[in-house]
Image (cartoon, rainbow over all chains, first blue to last red; front, side):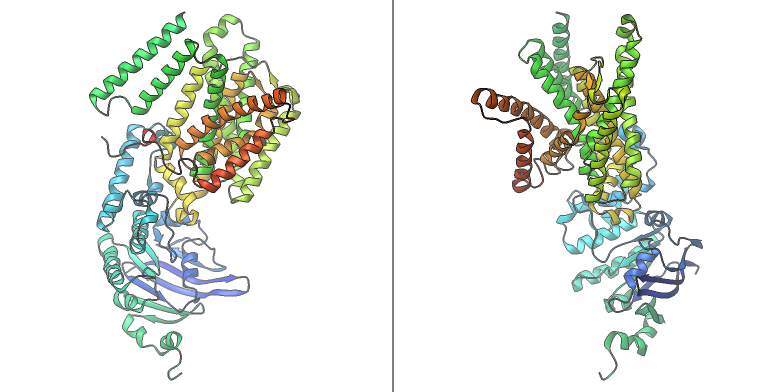
Length: 256
Length: 357
């Protein structure tokens, strides 16, 4: 398995606060990789650094052996990294279909002028984009919602919509920021199924942050545990689940 | 009169086309074009028969120019979610550039040549004016669109005032006297055509991949960026396109009034266009069109009404009271109809049915 995403000595400070400290890790191609850690341990910051929202204070990020450190977020998306957000970021006043179609915009070849004039080539491409987006929505059981305003969807479906939108960019790697947050047990079970399908059917490597231990232990093939920005354990779920340092970080000291 | 006959002909053709369309179902002639042709024919007919007098036609022409201004500002403020307060600055660029071109050319042209090539020169001048405004929009937008909300508003407000001040101080274009003697090329027909084309172009843009990208920037800039949208480029592009159409509107206005004057393009006028966008509904082209007509007519009614109050009743009021009334109107809209007249909805006529064909 080749390394898809490689992070080398990445640190990030907010003023004097060390949010992420000397991160080193490799995400192999084709796995479901889990990053876990208590609140405030620097997980979301790590995602923001990878996707270019922040520029790391130190260290470098490589994607498919190409350096992407400090690139603008949209450029990183174009390289093949997509993500979802912990707090949903949906285009609420747009239809479900349009939410997905936005993610295809950067691949549109028709120029501005041909879209102003609605030239046949442009209309054809629009139809392709529409069909593609509908196909994705259908696969994710959101096809029936396509024409609805996104803000009217229930929470569980919005989470799914975000994943569909990320997939529409045709990524090689998808970062999921707490995908199970706020979901009920039924929705969590569906989500786990969905994440596996994303990997298997779309051949996308999955890198997720999660608090929900059932999700992490259930689907992740490799796990990295961090606390206060530092790595405290790494490995396959069975090992990590037994690691005393992990248990301490999550549950407190035994007997306490 | 030949004119009367030609307008009758237009009406007959319009009715024939619409009848043909309804027989053949939805496809042959776009509904929007049919409606536009009908509307044009009706107004033209009313004008030729004298039911709408010259005074009314001037207000209708003004309304159409303001439709262009309102829908183009809506692209920037409503669709892309930016906050520009200096829209009239772009109109001024268009007015002065196109006005200078036609004035210069026709100053040295014999009447005969002018009558043949006049309209072509006019159309080219209007488009060059629009392009000049777009270039200025690009230059303003590129550095300032990193700013958000209030800050962008301040920059654009400042820009509008700077343009006005510059024009006030350039003697070549008349300085505070304004650019005088612009040939009268604008008429109902060409203003109507420009307005129609603007609406169609913006409708096409908004309901395309580019339009969706602009909307996504308004909805959530970070999510847009992480859906692969180059948000900076999108905003600058939206700004420049909006500026282009504002420049076109400015050019049309200059060739209608035969003068371009710095005071026409001050903050007062920009605010009026802004009110049109908000009252009509942010993001709704339909709303902007309706509001532009309504408010242009209201402005005229208020002007007349206030004059009457002062001259006949003797109440010492001036036209500056129209701005007070607009402010009240805007407050009422914000209180009772937060999303404006149309919200984000469009009239069916302006919605492209993608499932067809």
